[in-house]
Image 1 (cartoon, rainbow, N blue to C red):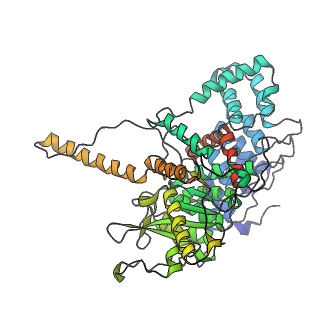
Image 2 (cartoon, one colour):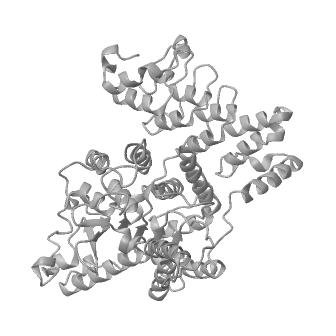
Image 3 (cartoon, helix red, strand yellow):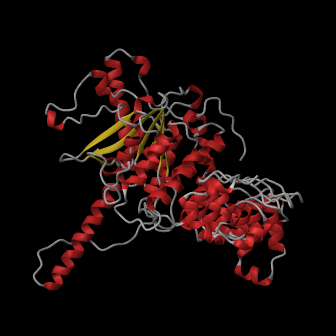
Length: 559
C-alpha cells in the first residue's frame, strides 16, 4: 500500500524530494525506501508515509537503511516507531540480522538499545548471534585482521545477546573470552574518584541494608526513585529503567511510591506519569535533540521548538494536579528572581505547606505566587529544564539543577516534612516511611587533572592574562561544583540512609568520556546507551537484589 501523491505535497517534502536515491525506485516501496537523509524521513513520516511498508523484495525501509549502513536514517525510522523486529520476505532476516550481516557495529548497538530481539531466528534458524559466529568463521583475512567480526561478537555478548555461549567448544570459547576481555578494557573508565574503593565498601554496607527491614517484613509504601539532571544524557536514565522493567517484568511506575526528578530527570518523570512508556520516552529524547539542538542551532537555543514539543507531549492545559496521584512526583526548579535563589518543587499532590495553609513568605513581594500542583505540566517541565546558557528562563524559573541536580536529599527532606504535617493533622494513613531509595545518575565522567585556580592582583600584562584564565577557571570550578551529582551529595544521601535504616542504591555508570548536555551526534548517543546497557548486564546481580524491595511477590528468574 502506497499513499497517493497528494499526501506528500507538504513544503517539507518538496524541499527534500530531489534528494532521494532514484536507483532504489526500481525496487519499489515508498519514498521512505529511497530516502538518503533523516530530514527526508522526518518529512515523509510527518506527511503520512507508511513506515513499515515493504518494497518488491519484501524489505521495509529500515532493512534498506541498514543494508546501506545509514545510521542516521535507521535511527530516524526507529524513533518514529518502525517495527524493529519485522522480518524480510526473502530470508526472514530481522533488521538485527541485516546489521550483523553488513558488520555495522553502531547500527547493531542502536538496534539492541531499542529492544531488538536477539533471539529472533531467520528462515535458516539462525539468531543474530549464530549468524555473527558463522560470519566470523567465514571472514576473509582482511576482515579478521581488522577485527570487525570480533567486535560484532563482543557487541552482542556484552549486552547478553550471546545465546548458549558456554556450549561453544572450550578452546574456541577461551579465544573469544580473551578477545572480549581486551575489547572490554577499551570501554572502561580508568580515571575515577580518589575514594572509589571506599565508596564501594560503603555501598555494599548500605545496599545490604545494615538496619533495613527484611523483604519478608517489607511494606510496599516507601519506595523512592530519584532521577538526576543531565540534558540529553537522560538517555542513560531511560536505558537503566528499561533494563529494570525487563528484568522485573513490571512497569517502572508500579515499583515506586515517590519519584523526584531534576531537569531531564524531571521531564522523564512527568512523561512517565503522563502515560508514556520508557521506550516512548527514549524516542522522545531523539526527537528533542533533533528539533531543539539540531541543525544550525546554537546556544542559547530558541525556546520555541522546546516549548512546542513539550506542549505536544503533555498538552497545553493539563495541570500537575491532573496527573495520577500515585506515585507521588516532585520536579525541581530554581526561583531565580531573588537572591539567594530558592528551590521550587512542582508536585502532583498537595505540599505540606498547602495542607497547613501556610504562605511561603511574610513579604508579599517575595511570595512565589505559584501553588506547586496548579502549574501546567509542560510549564513545569520547561521550568525544570531551563538550563542557563542553554535556554532562556521560564518566567522566574531556571533549571532545577542549579540547586538540586541530584534531588535525592530533597526527596528525603520533602517526605520528612510531609510526614510531620500528616501526623499533626492526624492523617497517619498518609505517612510514608522510606524503606528503599534508588538514585539514578546520568553517568560518571572520568576525573581530569586541571590547574589550581589562582585569583590575584596582576602587576604586568602577562599576569593580567593569567588572571583572565584564572577567572575563567573559577567559573568552571563553581559551575562543576553546582552541577555535581556524584560527589559529596551521594556521600550525604548514603549517610542519611545508613543512619535511618533505608536501603540505598546509587546507579550511575562510568563513562569513557564526558558527553555534552546538548550532544546530537547519533554515534556518540548510541555508544552511550550501549555502554549503559552493557553496564546493566554486568551489574545484573546488584540490580536484581533490589527486586524483592520494589516488586511485591517478586520471583527471581534467570536473564
